[in-house]
Length: 211
Image (tube, rainbow, N blue to C red; front, side, top):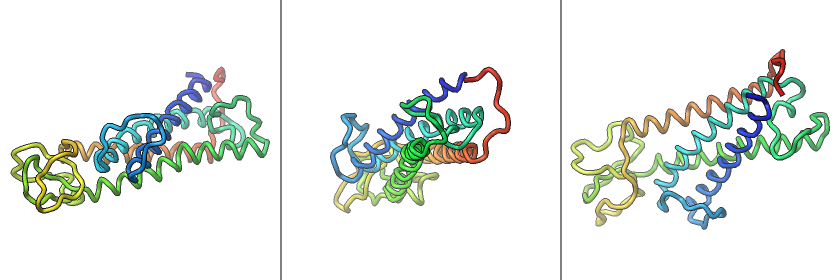
């Protein structure tokens, strides 16, 4: 795959990532989403769960495309960041450095900040058994073991009052599903770190025939 292909993949995954991250973040604050894209759920725990899951996949794909691009590129650090929208940037120009730094901030720093927000919302949310009036249990202490003796769907919800029965939210599967969520998030962060390291410490040689 040529560097031009990697740059297109980086741009595509990055744009979708920032749209989903910001859209979900704003909606989770109780505001109207700025992009005309319907969310999977209107409840904060559910939208944060899906935002984190989809975002981690997109971040991994974007970072691996950026990592390969940076690994196959020599020169100063702005040249090792895939160009988004603009082609043929002069890496020595000050405006090019500012633009590339802004792209890195938007595509990496902003989604990571949103991830922290999503993780916090999911972590302080509750698990309950559908239709039950029993007190819900915190995700923070039950994400792996779930609810012992549950005889119906386990739902991810916000905090419930004592009078409310478990309803709404989304069905989750404590154990494997939450483990998958934390694992995908961790892997995406590791791949992002490798991408950033590759920008700072470039490969010594460039493969011939790639452009």
